[in-house]
Length: 123
Image (cartoon, rainbow, N blue to C red; front, side):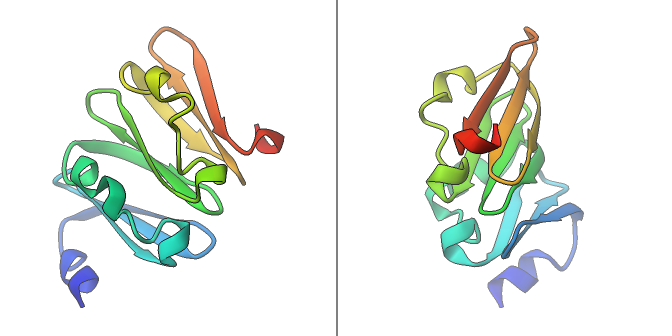
C-alpha cells in the first residue's frame, strides 16, 4: 500500500490514538493511517505536514503537530482539538511544546503562556 511504502524507512517516532497511528519521518513529514474520521486522514493539512514537523502528539480522536518554526497544525475530530481555529492566532508562532490528554491539547509558548483547545471538560 501507499502507507507501507512511506513507512519502509526513515521513521524516527510513532504515536497512536484510539484508532489511528501517526509516524514522524526524519524529513519532518508526518504519515497517518487508520480511521479517516479520527485523524487517519490528514489530507486537509497534508501540505503543512509534508516537512518541518519537529514533534507531535495525539489524544483519543485528534492530533497536533509542532513545526520547527513554532506553529501548531491540527487534524482529526474538531471537537477533540482537531480544529484549533478558535485559538489559531495563538498557535501560529512561538510554541515550544505541545501535549494532549483524552480530549484536549495544551501548547506552551516561549512567553510562558499556555494555550488550550479541544473539549472543555478535558482542559
